[in-house]
Length: 68
Image 1 (cartoon, rainbow, N blue to C red):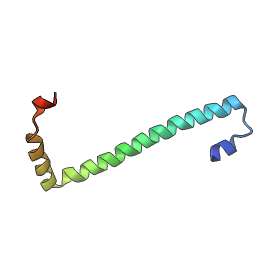
Image 2 (tube, one colour):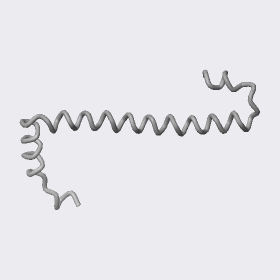
Image 3 (cartoon, rainbow, N blue to C red):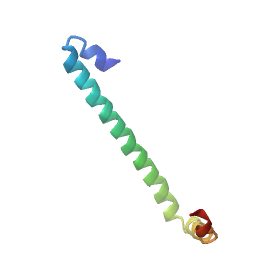
Image 4 (tube, one colour):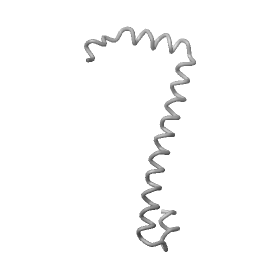
């Protein structure tokens, strides 16, 4: 809403180009923030020795052949 209001007086093709660029930027920013949050959550698990042991134990119980 704010950007549309700010570029209202721009020619239509320039306004559309700016909105398209902003849309791509915000999608990339959302992806980067999601990855950052995921990496922080993983780091929390990795730093906890008990959680790591449990995770390794759970992984060893997987039947990987049946997953294929």
